[in-house]
Length: 238
Image 1 (cartoon, rainbow, N blue to C red):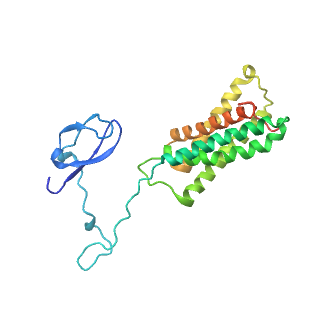
Image 2: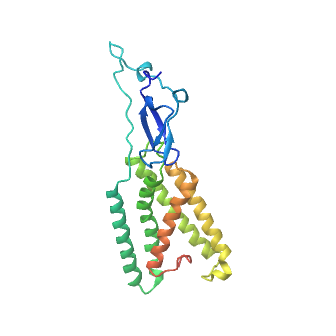
Image 3: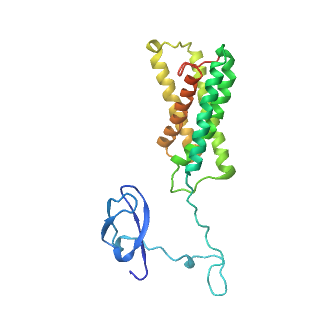
């Protein structure tokens, strides 16, 4: 058995790091190379032996070997460079928001700026949030397919802000939280739930991860509103 299976795949139960060890370590304990916590290598009898790739059908040469090999999966990660770019862009966005908000005397003149900003700020947040929350078990989206999903999710996030603002005006709410707190809580919960579902459907992540994804967008937009000198929760169509 050990001759047929030279490697055993092990998954650390603490950090979920996956790696391979020699079959001679079957049944032994040792430190995880990633988190250093003690783990046990499965016995050979507990492992699943995969059939060799050549046993499956496909285009083969005269010697019986496969001519075409399966495409290897590339493990794409969110690089520190991209993170730095996102952070610089975020800082620039807050500086622009501060300048726009404090250079306008009439808040009603900011309506379309806020509308456009709610969508534009969603695009980088949706894109970067995907790389943090995506399921590593699935092949990552890339290229046009990824950007299509990002744009759709961004539009859904912006629409939820629009629905929130519409309900504020429809119910004729005021900034008085003591009087209208249940309404604001209900609308916020509505946005988080449907925002989470929008992210989950767009990026094939769990609804919980989708809720975190939208909550981060919500936090950023609330901070931007405060930076512009606007109310964080009292949003309406002027």
